[in-house]
Image (cartoon, rainbow, N blue to C red):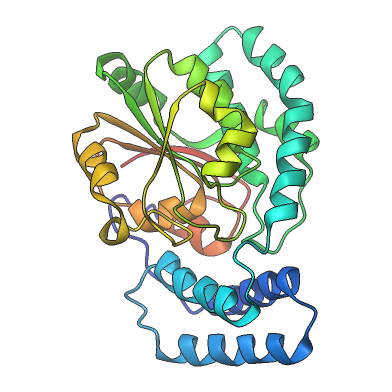
Length: 287
């Protein structure tokens, strides 16, 4: 596959069924009322019909989840699911920590562990097994691995801006934060959207004991810079090293700077194609 080195992610036709599925899934977590769910799908369908393909998927997702909240009256449809994911990850944490500590390259092992947690994604219509994914990611070859550039940036930087993704994977982010051995500012979503990590989720995961936690100000399932608050933007533009976790942040931030390192598992064909990798490949990509 051809690898797109610096182009910002846009929306493709293949994204449209995913938008509809996400709306229905979130709606069903919020309500069992069929009339409300039908209205939600109708509103999403109208929205999709009018969107521009120059928009990023998180921009469209932001609109969809606002409609989910408006029509169902539920601000955090995935609240219980997030708690379960975090609890499951916390149960695995001691073993994951042991694996990282006993690895000959602690930093690389922590990166792998953080990417393993990225499988916990309810924005993609797939089942996942955290236990199996941890084992696989510790052995799997990277499709893209800009580890040398990452190490060089880490050595020179005074702090790391770490943009979180899903609530459950934030538990595994703790291992990487420790391995970085630099001050870390951990970034969460402003409001609940899908199962993305919020302030409450990050505190429940134990991130507060490892890093300062701030909100980006973005209400979208991705860090849209034009919707972020001033504090985050000041840090974003001054940081020598930014870690961006997950697909939503890749969609929002691809091509936005050479100081960004994307860590993710390619879980959908569109993103895999944009990266020039295969579905289920793991990636540590600079810029």
